[in-house]
Image 1 (cartoon, rainbow, N blue to C red):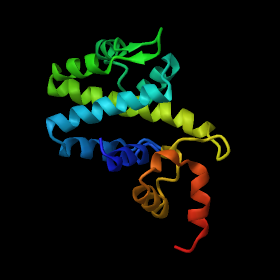
Image 2: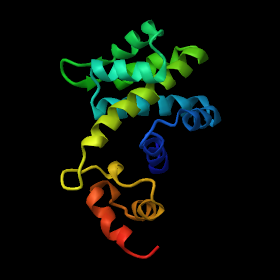
Image 3: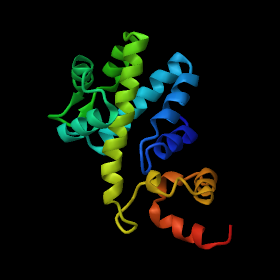
Image 4: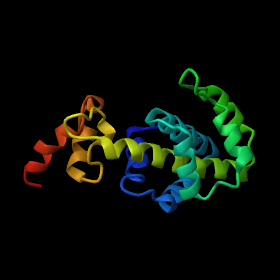
Length: 168
């Protein structure tokens, strides 16, 4: 996924999960791009930290609790005892899904990532944050600075204050 796509993914879960915009984006993509988006959502979710409480909250908010078999399959690719996600296995499995199951897997990924990342983001402070994706991605000045910085990945929330204090 591109930097623009990564920013968009994070913007669409900032404050609330904007599933309608996610769904419109997903629908506009090619099958390969859809798979990439789904895989990225799960990768980001597991990076943010997923546990059973995260799954339960996401299932309630995303209304996918009745897809127990699909959820069980998705969970099987996260090796919780060693903290790794089997991305290659997940991607291979994803290829075998029907369009309907793939769409449901996408929905699950959106809400799982939204809940997991939301839990992390709410606890971040300017002093403790070291993630560029926790910057104010809703401020065009911050977005411009990220796009122009070849080392944007070394930035964090603390880099926003100087940008925001200057005239727009």
